[in-house]
Image (cartoon, rainbow, N blue to C red; front, side, top):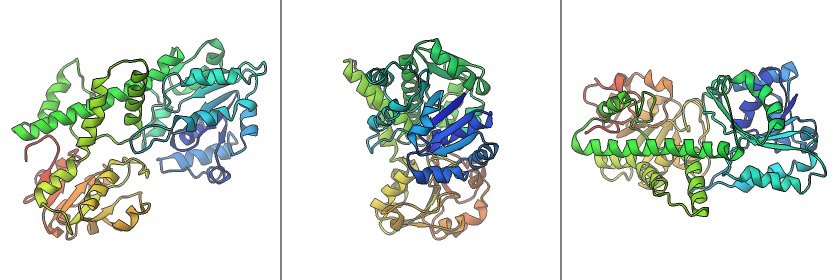
Length: 431
């Protein structure tokens, strides 16, 4: 069995490495020769713990290879696994044609009996469109199309892939299942087989539900701040209710970043419009989340007034801990707003050492945490790197002009709660 993984940023590079680690012959199809060359020496396109080592091992074992030649990569594949990270614009609207056009480019090379498994985020109905398009150029070949929503998380992707709690796969018939099942079984005991459209809808529904939970919780937290309640206490009570549960998304904190969750909310809004269904809740989710993105800066302004010329320190740039990706990072959006207000921003991130222009020239990237605190009038903790919990705050805080630390998610609350003289602000608690 040979698998071709097409689309090799985060989702695809992890998928290819993990497949090869289980002895599956895997060909990674890159869009450029440069990308294929980097991957061929075991260098992933972004930082993901353990990924470079896993890529190198797969290459060494002879189970993994990379190319930018579409014909040679696809022609030998029993399974073409499409793993593009669907791009989105600043309004979280996805460029679906980017993915569909690349899948169409493989049609001439697919062998008879092959299966195309799509895991890129595309709106429900996309697989059916591709089936119709392929039928027009099939020339007697029988190719099955399937859909499986991805469930990876930046910073923890290898564990999530290799120890999946469940995998949803939408298929039309047994031909696709016979190819897909032996490939996925080594990674998960619970394979849920559905119709294609249901599998496509699962991703929309799951992400929209999580987005709704995040925004609902943050709205309740903001009310708590205004009435003297403590959202952490409210959260504890909610988790004890079996209708909500211990793992529910009911912790006050930052807004969700654009891309994954917002993209699926936008998909559902567009689909609902096409079928003439009103989705007022989903519309409100994005509006509420956009407003909540301003929480940090509103609190900085509330303490410091005008920010023109004031020195603000920032801990973290990455989208989340465990990656160096900054695409659609909430931290970046906060920094942009601080700069727009005239603040002088100094940042430190363990993995991000540079920023694209024009942001790069407007922000000072410090070589150490000390420079973030020194002479700052406020420090904002934005990316939850574990090492930030280990900082010597008792030494760092006195170096500030003003002892103001904003930690929206209460990430370092245990370390900071007893620090004398510190003005410490978290979400969901009256200040």
